[in-house]
Amino acid sequence: MPTSLISRLQPMQLFAATVPRLPLRVRNRIRTEEERSEILVGVLQMAFIAGLAILYALAPKKFGADAPFAPVPWVLGAYAAFTLLRLALAVARRLPRGFVYASIAVDMALLMGLIFSYHIQYAQPPSFSLKSPTLLWVFALIALRALNFEARYIATAGAVAALGWLLLLLYVVTIDPRDSMVTRDYVAYLTSNSVLVGAEVDKILAILAFAGILSLASKRAARLVEYAALETASNEELARFVPSEVAERVRTADAALAAGEGETAEATVLFLDIEGFTTLSERMTPEEVVGTLNDFYAAAAEPIVRRDGVINQFLGDAIVATFNAPRPSPRHAAHAIEAALDILALTGARTFGPGVRLAVRIGINTGPMVCGLLGTPDRLLYTVIGDEVNVAARLEALNKSYGTRIIVSESTRQAAGAEAFAFAPMGEVQVRGRSGKTPVYALGALAPAT
Image 1 (cartoon, rainbow, N blue to C red):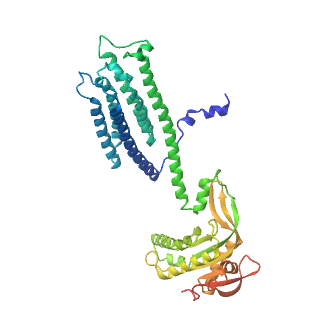
Image 2 (image 1 turned 90 degrees about the vertical axis):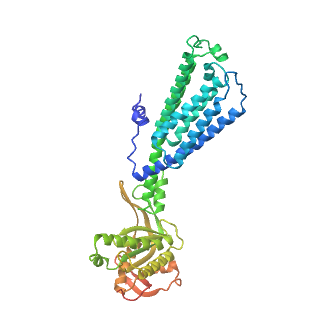
Image 3 (image 1 turned 90 degrees about the horizontal axis):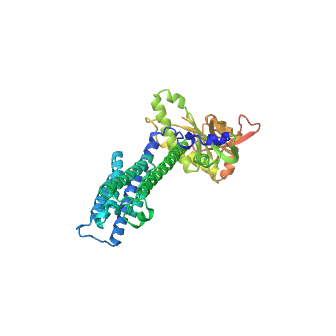
């Protein structure tokens, strides 16, 4: 046998693939779905009871002289009462695992009791009950347990059903020592109340085989559910670290994304830095520093996201945001300016952390840049790179020299619309890293920083 085929047939490959330990939040999510499944099981059981009641009501009845009452309605009534109790506990999220096992046993016991009652109902020998097609509902009850992907419940249902039918068979062949009703004639078995032991054993084996196969399928499906739940939770967490568009690309990619995958796009970069935060943080505890930054980040992120921007990085007390990469934004330059003005307004209107006033400096530039994944095969970072990104950072630093808050480049002014905002020309400057001079414009507060 080829080696590759042997490896595919390894027991661990087929039956016991290892699932990573699930985080508590994922286990809680799966538990919630299991609780909902138990409610669904209860509802379907009530439908099952209703179906049996309808069939009983429509079926012709023959009551013998020694059968003064009909036991079937009593059995169905007890079954319905127990199922209602189970459903109520499931809805209240108070259904313990032990009660689930007990309900499986009761389900099968009541079904077997219903089948057993037929020979009393119709005044026939006990073997009459073994002919009942109601036995087929056993498979429905076993399959019902697959709704919550618990292989143990399915196996328990199959074992209890097989045991119930075995006990019923033993009762039939031992109740009358003078006549066990056993025959070896298949025709006699089909045309009379005789018992063919082999046929009844076949039923038991069929129940066990069905439960075993369904348990195995459920176990494998449960692993897929756990993997899917873990991947979903990971994707949700991933969206907190990278732009949602990138997280979606990772989730739907046919192959794992690799370093170097990217695209060139015309975009606008907003580079923001908190003025004097290093000096300010020396007067605060580490907890206050973190709290202040997080408070500011949450406030500053809102206008950026609202204007279709994407925060690429938090760099200490700085923010790098892009517009039109990776999230499409036709008015990306104007949106970046609007977001910058909003941030400037909110820093002037409120405090952060333990009542700290913050001032910001912002540089905005527009141009072609590369957007993609950088890093190693094991660790990737989504970012934007290129000369235009560096220019935005240089413009942010120029605010300190001019005493301004927001400086934009000529390319940003043209892309946003030369008359769309109150651009104040600041002349041409030599931006480090570029050979020519760059016209720059100020926006917002022009007074020297305090």
